[in-house]
Length: 149
Length: 393
Image 1 (tube, rainbow over the protein chains, first blue to last red):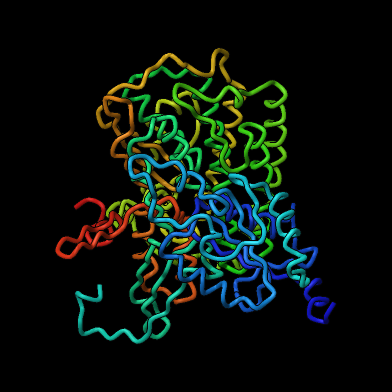
Image 2: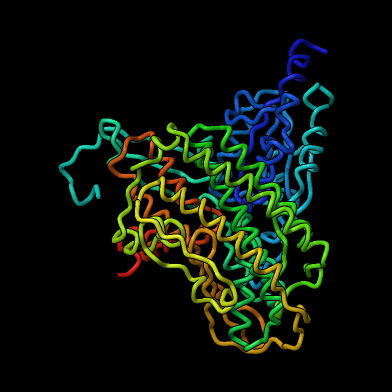
């Protein structure tokens, strides 16, 4: 274990990138990380908005075409090793926006799942997932940060 | 504004977004500043466009309701309820009174959570973390209650056509829990509001900032608490038949500034608690769902509902097979944001984001329209039309 990974274990910075779902997962993530009931900050997990200091990227929602380039750019700015957590059914498989379409057959306005845009390590299904499940998902991403292949 | 006065020089442009700490949702703000005073403001809300309305076309109506609920994650119940009300008005489906009561109950639960997430967001922007965290802690009580009633914290899926899902029916033990939680919440909430109003720092940040006069509020059709804080008495709940049995006040303040927009929501939470108490005490007996209906051809029908942010409109028709055609939604944030764009002009640049946040913007609701630019013809979005002409042309 290197010095970098030892120090990282004590302070994991999470960046939230909301790419165009329905806002529900987004607030649940902020709830899980910040709100006094679930409070991940007590374990040294911080919410940051700067991709250069982030370790984990949480993506919630289908990717709309306006957010496609910003998402790729944010992903490229995060230093290695990094983990990506896809939170919610939209990020995992497209949910209603991709799968429940009427006459148009294919919804070309959204890119889903997030895996088709950037590599994803952990998926947290649910519409919307509970904060407990989001915390579980964030923990599952830890081995990747510690340098596991 | 810039086109009208070409001689005016605007020195600098400050742009935020789409991903920025002060904005939880993706949208882009361009502030044109002159000597730290905002001269003009432009908001681009099209970051979360998902092509919602086109998805509805050609779906059976029950399936369409699933998408309608996922228009927004904060006001999910409103969209589900209003989509159901359209077909109930159009086909004349009777709704049992017990179902109406429980729909109102979940609506008021979500109104409280929505207003508390607004406090969380607004005080985060002000920079007062403690008040924001306390708002999120208070909110958890009602997220729990939504989970007990509907089974999910965010998407309770309570309304179905003709009533509510039988799962969401209130039992006696649940009624008792609701009353206990509400009483506990009310005591804590009173302390919380008193703490906001006593804080000289918070009040100095919001008092007299972001003026929106009553004329402007009516011109831009700033509905909901945003309009009511400007002295415009406009609340659809007073006219809806679902709200007839309940006794509540419409909070109208005439301060026209950010402080009143915060205080208006703070007082509305207490009115919601009043309605919740009345629902639980006077809940009638009987069935919760009327399954005696058939989807058939329906002309275009429109339903309006007072959401937590203002007035929402859903409209659609059914074709001869009972499939949904031409779904349209208009949400309050479209008009509220246009009003806020106007309100933040003339203030110091540090107040602009707070002013915009004070209308409780919900960008995912309102982002369903887009500029169609096909060579010769260019169709304007709802938002651009409101911004250019005001709501009533």
